[in-house]
Image (tube, rainbow, N blue to C red):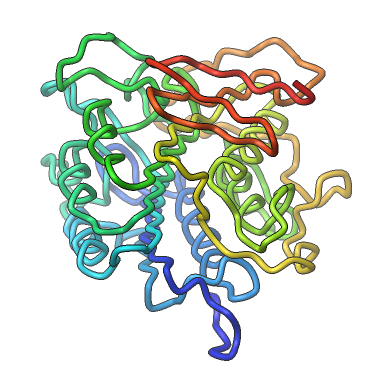
Length: 354
């Protein structure tokens, strides 16, 4: 785990909860989903590295493997509510399974189970997540959801009606449109999802990590969080720039099979993390030098629910051509000097040079 020098500058307004379950749909630990634990540990290390994102270690909780129980996750969310004061930035990261509950159009993320028998004790519904996040005093909240192989979770926008149970078309997001609207009131709120609802989240091998698997989505996030391809020069990573960088990386590495989604609310393209320039070579992620994920992505097929072919998108000469940012209502997506605003639930496609 990352250590910190008290003399170095820290992102003191940063609080985070990092979760990697390593569990199957029943909540049982299995090597088939070790990549979700690898994702969480690597994300935690970069988030707390004082030369990179510089979140104070005592303001970040890591729940990985058997520690990622429903009780522990709920307790950590309560801790965030208590500790994250006005003006702070809260980052919540989840890598694991998610699925539809079949109850009132709700969806849930799946924790590790505390029992050898599946008894529904490993589900945390979207409504529960909303109840935890809504009271937070934090000014800015970003939710990263790497819901691997979440068959049946949150499809594309099902209805444009204004009832409370309509679903937001953001890939694997266990919150509905109304809940996200309310969370966004008076503060910046963003959800970055690993893929569309009809896509799998792919894994590969990070060079120098042996045969440890990592999610392409998480590599894209971590690369962006360390300042790679960031247009800002003030030492901060901003949410829209992070999303655009991640979308480009994931689409390129998966050859269009996986397309992350962003829903971004609030007037500001807010800072997610601090980074220190000049140290990117230590991360060994530079494109073009063979230090990125290997190209031979493998989809885990141990779970019967996972055997769904991801639809291939047409090859594009420009990797951004099909990287779509979901802009809803007053949402604003910013990439360099390009600013897009959405009304209703319009999908905006960003093209390089446009």
